[in-house]
Image (cartoon, rainbow, N blue to C red):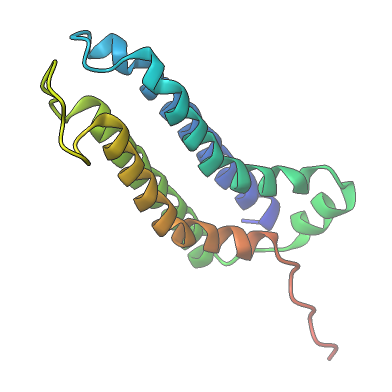
Length: 157
């Protein structure tokens, strides 16, 4: 696999999970039609999700504009094991983030009409999930660092 193809695969993973997460958040009030999730709660959640995904997506997308960069990375071969680790770390992180962000929306039961203790509301639980996603982000950003840094110069023999 070459570096350009691996970048594209990871870009597609990030894009897919961003769209999947946005759809899952938007569908929350529809699926949980009991009124425990209000449409007014969605906007702050969506802003946080977009902020989490924007930096890696921007970083990866920026490499397709210079033609020389695409040509150079098509020539740069990536060892199969490194590609598997990069894809595995990225997919694993994105799955954990997706599940942890959807958990407070779809799984947790919120009592209606009661004032919830601090930390038990949808907003608080979602903020906790975002904190977890941010803390784990170096795992997913390590492959990005590898893919976005210049290939090492080969010593002359």
